[in-house]
Image (cartoon, rainbow, N blue to C red; front, side, top):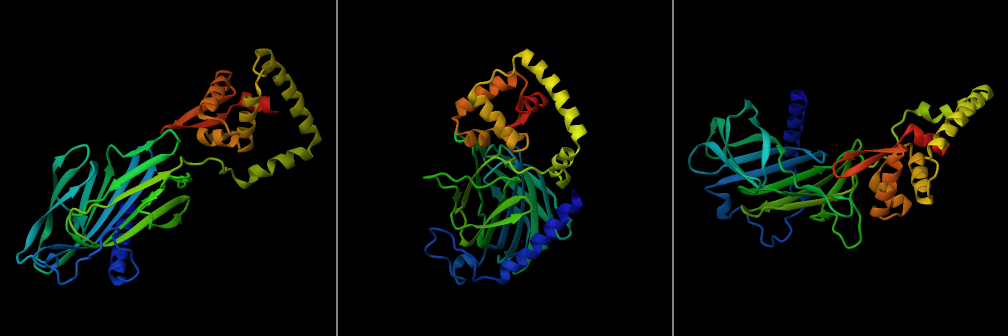
Length: 342
């Protein structure tokens, strides 16, 4: 874990250098009509954030990791050895470090909505000198929740402590999660984002220029729970059926056993299903035996209440089982359910 974090921080440092060398192709802060010129007083007798990179990794509904890389320059007429930062959120498992190693820090104020962090540099920062430091932490009381439409809402307020030349933020969604699309609803804000893919995860990113203190950009993403419709079964699983079908003897034995087991199930009364329950079982079977409950309802074109009611009856009969993921549920077809489908 430590080695992986160090590799990530080195990559972010390289990206910081890249941002500083490419000033013309970035986006400006929405609503900032009069960007501060380099001759403005804000760029003298102060601390300047030359670049601020924030990477947010949403791994699940209760695991969100954040890494920040800050490149600051001291334009005060005296040296500084301590840095104070405000964050518009509560955090835990904090690590602060620079190129020489970890730095001592204290959390002066911590509430459910913000905290104040202070730390000492390993070496004083003289006038006109620059340094890069890193902050990593877990988000506490994460602003991620599911509404009645069964999508997740994530909101992050970035804190601008100093005049910032370049502000870069990216949000990595959980694997197999996608932006929620709904008429009349803003799925991503600000809307001037770029989109990329890393493995099975979608990454949204923004770049803003010339931010003054107290202008704290807010980022909002609405996304669907992870989709399980695409099976991760190995290739051999898709050819087992045809191979088994070649052997007449094996198929005959299989059907004899199934008929006996099916008779036992009928005696238990589990085959007395209504049309809605049969539709749900058929959909679960078609997608490989597991599916998110929200996806199941959409495929069946059922309301949430109708889906939940029929799933409850199927679960009581032992034909399906459910596991929670955040506020959604993953529905699995049981062995008994497979026998009913057959």
